[in-house]
Length: 194
View 1 (cartoon, rainbow, N blue to C red):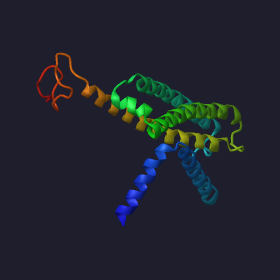
View 2: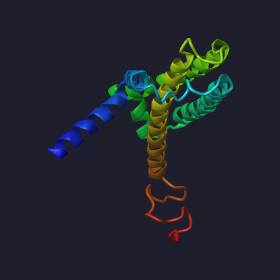
View 3: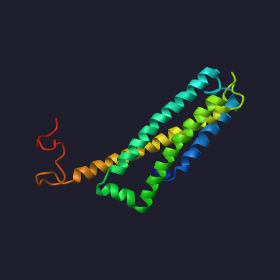
View 4: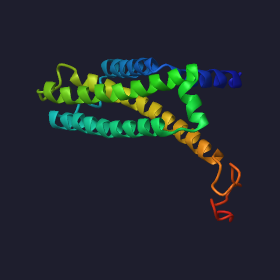
């Protein structure tokens, strides 16, 4: 029975990669449950309790971190676009997988813009010592969405790097050598790596 549940959870986890909209549902669930807990228990409001100065610091830090992640996204897209091996060509052109990758890239890039915009807008709207408008809840949702999209970015990076490395391994070496080298061998040296 445990194996069946674990398999079902693994399928659900992997199928969420095909659907970036799942991140919005996860965000709504996490923030909704947190909001309900704060209303029910009267404690645990992480962004609502601190003073205005601390909240503004969180908002600007969130916008800064998202901007940095945005630069990683552009680097990842550049690496994806430059890779030219057979596995990367298949990844870009195979129907369902190619569409899945494009959806994920676009969702990550658009999320960085949305999250940075929310954090910066919050610095303008949160003007009172106590956040009576609930701006901090919107920022919390943006940060949770950012965490979900960071997982997607990590998955895309790992996939692109893995496929690119495998394509490079299969390339013929100069001097007439075969494609793949023995495990642990330094290219061109013929000695195992210690």
